[in-house]
Length: 241
Ligand code: GLP
Image (cartoon, rainbow, N blue to C red):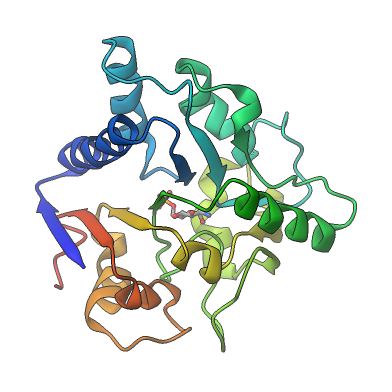
């Protein structure tokens, strides 16, 4: 693991954008695995600025997102599909047909998961997977459990995750209880992984991820076994490391 300890959220966002930009410049048809949540928003803003300056071209980029809430359509403002359009896709020249997110309204979620796995394979796998981390150590929506989840699968969100994500909804009751998430296997098959984290709320999860035993109780701890992981985190998130 390569760890960059940076001062604050802005520095984390700039450094993450540097790494993603280098990937895009070196391989203009890269498959980027993208993440949602508050953490990547600053990095996405940086990428948008660089695109506007003429320094980045997304016309050949393909993207696959980690996850989506079950029961929310792509038009729902609380869906991750909408989040991605608002925070990145609408402001850059990525082709909409090259952006992929699990369908939260699929009538058969299991079938949708199989389709998504097949899609990732058809794209040739993920070149760079961007990850945030949940307070409980989840990546994507791979929640702590008894075994490492494999490929894309429907998940029941933990109370911890529902409470943490309630800020994006009018009330905690509105947060969907289920989601579709790419699995640990999909994430581990990415050629390169970039995990970003900011703030003290992530300190324990990050400590366990980097220094703790590899256990499904901390899903991100499996990243210790990946040969090309970069962590960019601020001093608050790395306070225990
Ligand atoms: C959600 C997402 C994760 C994300 C996590 C942390 O649960 N499914 O991909 O990493 O939230 O979010 P935040 O960056 O807002 O702390």
